[in-house]
Image 1: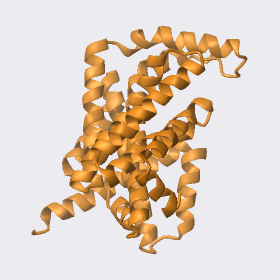
Image 2 (image 1 turned 90 degrees about the horizontal axis):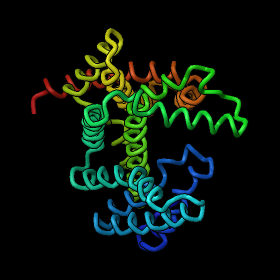
Image 3 (image 1 turned 60 degrees about the vertical axis):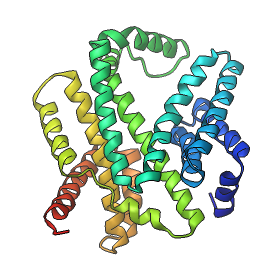
Length: 300
C-alpha cells in the first residue's frame, strides 16, 4: 500500500467495493492469513469519508461476495453471513475510532463485546460440545474423503474442537477486527503523512479494570473446568497478546532493543505460537498494569 493507492480508495467508492470484494475472496481461495484485509478497506473509508461512505462500500462488497458464493455453488446467504463476519466488527470499531481517536478504547470495547458474545452464545445454545459435535464430525468426514493427512476422529480432536469452538470463533473475530482496524488506521496515517499510527499503536492498553479481569479469568481457567471460563481466558489472552506486541514495538522504537527482536517475535508467532503467545501475553499484562497504574496515580 502506498499513498496514491490509499488516496484512490478514499476517492473511489466503486473501486473500494471491488477491492473489498476481491480481498474477501482471498481466504476462500486458501489464503487464510488475509481474513482481516476485507474489513480494512471500508474501515479506512469510514475514517476518511465518514460512516455513510464506509457502509455503502461494505454493502456493495457484501453483494459481490454473495454473488461469488453463488458462483462457487453455495447459497447466497452464506456469502452475506461471511461478509457480516469479516466486515461488520471492523466497521463498528472504525466508527468508534473516528469519534474517539483511541485505539486502546477500541481494543477494550472489542474485548468486552467478545465477552458478552461468549456469554450470549453459551446461554442461548448450551453445551458447545453437543451443539458443534455433529458439524465437526461432518468436517472430519469431509477431510477424510479428500485424503487430508489429519484425521480429527482418530486424533481425538472432534470433542476438543467442538467444546472450544465458540471461544476460538470469538477470539478470531476480535483479533481480525482489531487487525483490520490497525491496517485502516495505518492507511489513514499514510495518507495524512503524519506517521501517527505507529505512536498510537505502541500505546495500546487494556486498562486497569480489564487487565485485572484478564488476570482473574486466566487464573480461574487454570484452576476450574467450566467451558465458558476457558473461552473467556482465550479471549483475554488474545487481547493481552495485542498489548504485548504493542509493547515490543514501543521498546524497539525507543532503541531499548534491537529491531531484530521484533522480527523474531513475529517469526515465533508463526513457528512457535504457544510459547510466543504465552510470552507476549505475560509481557502485555505487566506492561498494561504498569502503564495503567502509572496513569491512575499521575495527577491530571
